[in-house]
Image 1 (cartoon, rainbow, N blue to C red):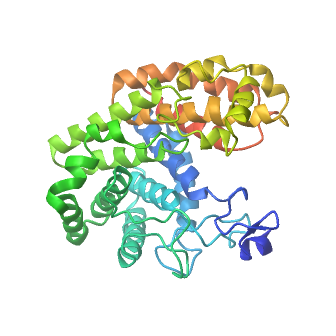
Image 2 (cartoon, helix red, strand yellow):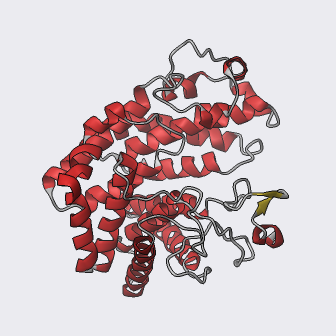
Image 3 (cartoon, helix red, strand yellow):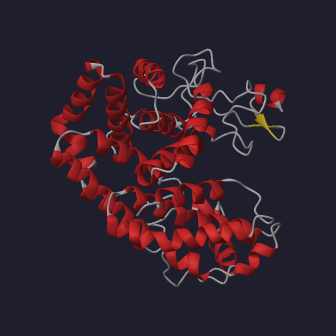
Length: 375
């Protein structure tokens, strides 16, 4: 309820970032959808996708105006159009920037749309710059839940900072942001480019996660903004290697994939039992594509079972993350490889509509379907 949101609660418990509320990822989910709609329209020329993109852009415009704090991207809003959670995150801000930038680059954007996009992205970047490129909660009293500085010398930091600056510079045509993009790219002898955005960084990177696909969209935007052909090639190589790693590594190896996303804090015995309920064995190496093929489809008939919820994270969600990266990589071979599984996912979601209870995998499947068009 709006009253619960105002208290920063979900289900009567403190949750200032709104997890479990159903409105915690409005900017993330719709940002990825708008990006994909623009891709679908470009690939097909179909006016249907243009109409959907225009409508979603109009809705997302409202997100920029509900907070009194310029440049803050909230979690929400509630259907009342006013209530929202005041602790945001990297994924909400980044996906919103990416979506507005992508729409602004499309033939659908009017001159007025482009002015709005430029002004909004400038406000977001200016607020983050004032806060040392951290995301603060709305009143600036504390760093947001996933509000780490984008200046950190890691692959996550390099992707977040450079992609955002590239898009803001492109949308605003303001030389100040272009200068900042080049300055941060050159910092410490070009460490962000030479180390953290180099494909070799993936060899020693963190395990993949259910939500790592968001960086694929950021990298695609960065690749399209970058003017240097060698840098574009480097980003493409990074994206291709990331997608191959996501498609081909053993999900049950905790060095390759984070177990927290589907197993939670369960111990080894409980995790094995959790997998066994789906007909899976942790000792048998399986890729995301193997898992999507292998899980017991009978779990769809019991939406209240623990196995049903595990399936949506382990056997469906992780696969969407890998396929998202493949479709955004710019590699046609990877796109062709992804498409048959995307088609099966669409069929599976469509045939189990009465059993499906949560929106994340539905949204992701729609995004994948849009990205697979025209390939």
